[in-house]
Image 1: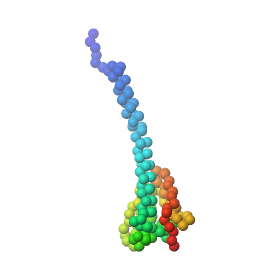
Image 2 (image 1 turned 45 degrees about the vertical axis):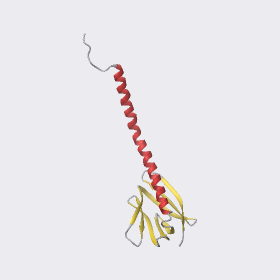
Image 3 (image 1 turned 30 degrees about the vertical axis):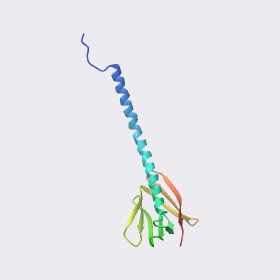
Image 4 (image 1 turned 180 degrees about the horizontal axis):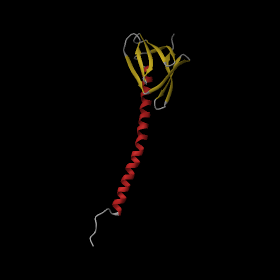
Length: 140
């Protein structure tokens, strides 16, 4: 009697193991990507704070309410505003048409003056919320 070619038990078991490993890896990919996105938003948020507290501008707060922040740069002798538009937070020079995007994927921006310092809160599109008190003095 002639032997028919086909899978042996070991070959079948190995293919089942390989398919199972691929399925497990595919299920973990979204969790890894979400963790990376969360880490990116935190890094970008701290870069945003670093820009506001930078010695390049030496900002003082003129007003802050409902997410509209007016600042004065002692270093550049110019007035600036910070506003959120289309999920992006911008730093804009009031006297010119230029602007700098500071933070992406921002869903909400809230700001207020607490103890003569700026308290800023940002909620991102992924639901993360970050709040900080900035070391920027308030001057009327």
